[in-house]
Image 1 (cartoon, rainbow, N blue to C red):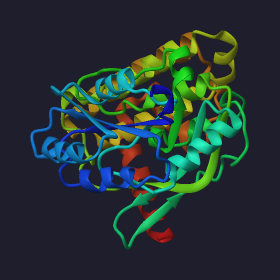
Image 2: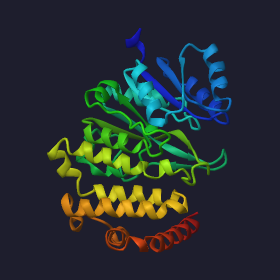
Image 3: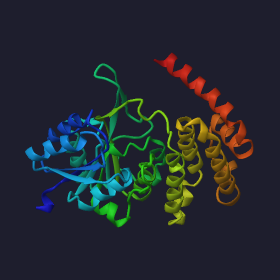
Length: 336
């Protein structure tokens, strides 16, 4: 029976009562029949669990794991451990997918023996406003090794647009960090799958709807402020396992890290910004002096300014950040 499951779909849930029905219904409507749906309830305090249980009663494809709150990474690692599919996919509980998503991804995965089969997605604001994300800088419908095409590492992590071969994940011991209540827990996972994958392909179809809300507009918990730093500790730990591969990616790592840390800085509560900047500056000064010569990093003009400020005058970064934020808002307004 185990070999009949083509894709295990993991749905991590926490207080998702508002959106979970649409999410699960979209998975149940998949044109690929040989799937299992594993819903991991991470200690929800609303009606999420009751809604999941009502689905489970009427459909044998659905399995529920109900556990105490321990975070996104722990939920997905637990889902991995009991899943049986040849490939593994992830749908977050506030998103929903097109009915042919997993059939399309699985057909490509089998036809081309892929470690990662990926599609594009929609930014979903409402039924009236949907914006497609195609990652135009990535070549579509071509098989390659991500480490040989570094543009892959610059796309938004968006781990839920892919299916991953189980044997590939197991061979490379790829798991999530289990920082309780953390954000950014897709960061190191996505980097690791791209770093180790041998066969990757992405289609141009937008098959997942990534719901946009304001719920995550700020990080107010001190425990989450430095989660992105822990993810980057894991990334550097990974790349140093293979010197030849590390040399391929090391000069782009500060660029990716800058974009991650910039986004974290914008989101965190004002009272934590200074501490985060100090830690950022400390990490980068060590990195610049001991591992990566920042003069050889291909920063663009904006990134060069930001990196110089962080390394030398981090107390000025709030001013630089404010200026760039205003410019970006003006640019987006003009574009829309």
